[in-house]
Image (cartoon, rainbow, N blue to C red; front, side, top):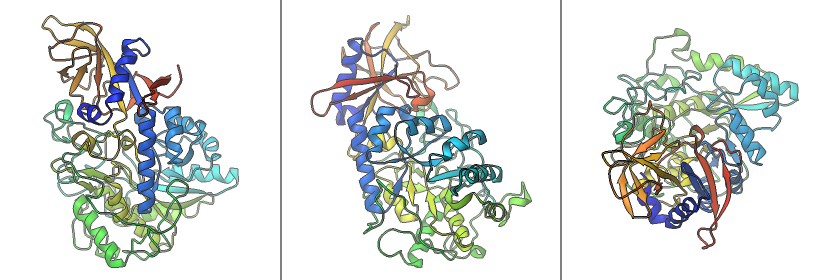
Length: 522
């Protein structure tokens, strides 16, 4: 998926990775990470976020929660969003500051005293039980903790295994199922040929599932969607931004620039989110709540239909002494058009904007709206324009969003490759590579055999099977040959080794460490 990109933009990484394997310095089934390129990408993203008036929380699950890489990223983006408690502990131990805990995975009550003592910027809660637990723990520690409300996503706009959240009034189902970016469905059959396809779906057509959230096709640059400048406020590398003041419903003004945009401008932004995300109806998210008609309906639980879901949550949460409701989040908030590559807000972004209006109408101030998924140089302007306060870059840190596979001119540099070895050859001539790191939704396409220069097709494999091996099409390869690949991954769910390298751009490459996929050094 990214082999052409890395050969074009970072050929030194390919060459050094092959050299490390040939010399025995790294085993097969190793991700080789270019620390300098990752730090370069972090600096780019921090600078662009600062220019646009956004704050960033970085995510590292996809690179194996690696302490060396965490330190490099945190020099430019100090705060993190931890996907689960084990990841939070590794990030904290590496010296990064806690930005958002509890999203995507809630913090168990028994772990709250430990993690709240780090004084995280926010903690995400999915329901009142978790809000009460955070309040109780914070009260015992003697402070009030800011929390973000995780919103239940629109039907069809939630990945399996990530269900939950507070339901916004009006329900969470779009007529006929939510369509994300005119083509995305997340709740269907994700097998090849199924109805839950993203960019073709399945192993053969592109990444599917929770890590296909920025599936793109078609090049465009960081200014493709325009930009929003800022003339002040805290730095993206040091502070956090919030929407300013108490706002009437329909006013989405933030803290970008010295003066917030007009209500008309914000209504236009909200209407853009509504139209692109699938929400329907004149003035959706741009006017008063009574005027909103965005096609949502759901009769599964009358307690959460209409205005009761969020309001009922707030009626209780506002009385809890140990928390302050500081904003909202949802996932995914942005996806990209499979035909054009244009990033578009999902219905979840539309819900988040409506929820922020609700909070402001109840008198809540300094509100945050974190809009994770597909955060990159190309999509930061969209987040700023629509009213987010926070983005959460992950794959942009390694230059491995699907956009980078088709547009080699994107600013972020490709920063990793996967190295394996031919283990044996089948009777029909197909080489079998050692597996362990072939992430099921990775979109692996070709393997480079450096000894011969051959590029052999990676054969499809069912996601339900363990990747002991991965077959290649027949070609010029023999047992023991190094193979270099580049595809989308989530290292923390693999069995792979992670090798960190530095000095490639200066011509002095070196291996700086070997780690397991959860960031523990070998």
